[in-house]
Length: 386
Ligand code: NDP
Ligand code: MG
Image (cartoon, rainbow, N blue to C red; front, side, top):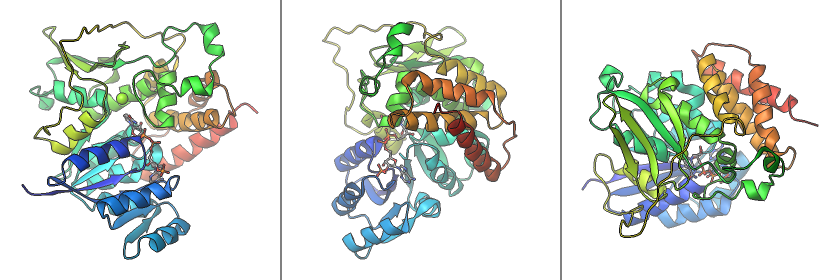
């Protein structure tokens, strides 16, 4: 078996750690050759480099570069976005496990270099969909979704023809657990605390996506992600609440057949799927035991108490850089909530207000996108309650 080299960018986070677990199980198949972190967990980055004997490492600043060079003499330490780009074209498979818009250089560089991109970082795809579309057809480039819903759809679409724009597909149905506040009344939602918002019922994830799951913004972002990934308009992407997180998403075909992918909630399964394609790795990370009773429930989302979901459809309808604008505003608002500056309710209020002040621009170049992202952050910051 020939070994596949893997660059894991965002190695110190939740997806990063679970990717390392998959790699530990398959040392003959995969070799970790590059890692990067955001500087929030430098000891962990060093420990990963030592364990996997990784020589290429990315950090955000020159100061951290010095720290790494003294801990790991002889390693090649690169800095910032340029460093991420270098690492994102340095291996056969690139896992983008960075959180937020900061993952953009990884997404674009990996596809431009004709690599397999195993994408967890949905924010970059949502913000840059037209730019990603241009580079994803580079010879050798492959875009595979780690996000569990999209990985489920990728599996459920096997056999459907993308060449015809998925004519046989009526709609994609994304499942959502509903987060910790599913079924809560408006009054109860006024009393949401940070601890409660950080306690997801079915998944253990990094803080940003956990908050996004509590507002349903995560599902809104995933509607945009699905549309960009599969080239299917958001009018053919629906969301259904499924509290058990066993059915990870579904595809409804025009004849009424619905194909779903089921497993226990375990991100190692979609990570292994993206790393192993076209083969399946022989570890049943999320296997279900059908000898145990299993109840699966589905219901429509509550759009009144969770207005983030309709906002995402609105951003898609506006087009241009509106999805980038919305996602940037959301990053600002979530950071402010995590810093105890605003209440849970105010997260989506800030995003909504920022989207209502959207300054329309088409999206034809990276510089336009970077400008729009910076401007959206400015407007969102100005919209934070004092
Ligand atoms: P975490 O917060 O746990 O991890 C984020 C990672 O990104 C950390 O390794 C962090 O490094 C790194 N990072 C942040 N900024 C930079 C930067 N400028 N350069 C390099 N690395 C950076 O997040 P998650 O693992 O939960 O999520 C990662 C992505 O995957 C998100 O886009 C999320 O939406 C998506 N996703 C996550 C799922 C999950 O189960 N966790 C499920 C589906 C999608 P450090 O901490 O060292 O600063
Ligand atoms: Mg998901």
